[in-house]
Image (tube, rainbow, N blue to C red; front, side, top):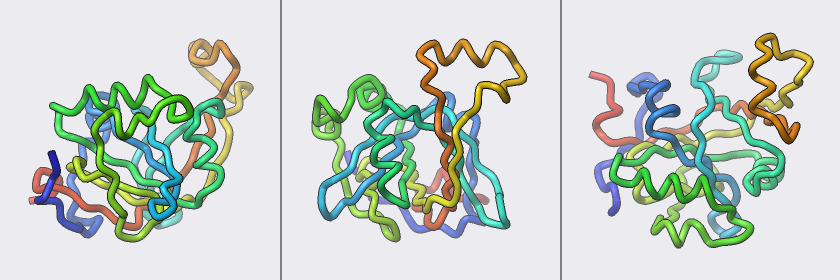
Length: 179
């Protein structure tokens, strides 16, 4: 399945439901270099979209033990992509399996394609592709948790690293075009 009706969009024309997109649909975070075939992907459900330093951005988090973390540290860009509901099992597979141990992209039946402005690949099956250049990172600090329940998400003390990425390109299907 490929999405042939994706088109490049101006950020001002994009209609997103960020809470639904992340928490319900999930997305794939992909980082690396398409040309050298050195990249990895993982499923993400935590993050945010907004404006920072007068630029459109996405913030997402990656735990240091994740294989994708190595790529996020090495490369200055990444992509986020969303998929039709019938492909959610593929995202679940990518979230439960490490690229260190299995070629999860091939096993999930995803087809990597070059992105328009960044080295990190996108996927042909995506209905939404967001290309980003990293602009900031920081580590979550447990001493700054105001809600004590947050600590329960970190029994291994593997606190997420936050990455802010400036959105530099978006391609999407019609459902993401603002009327």
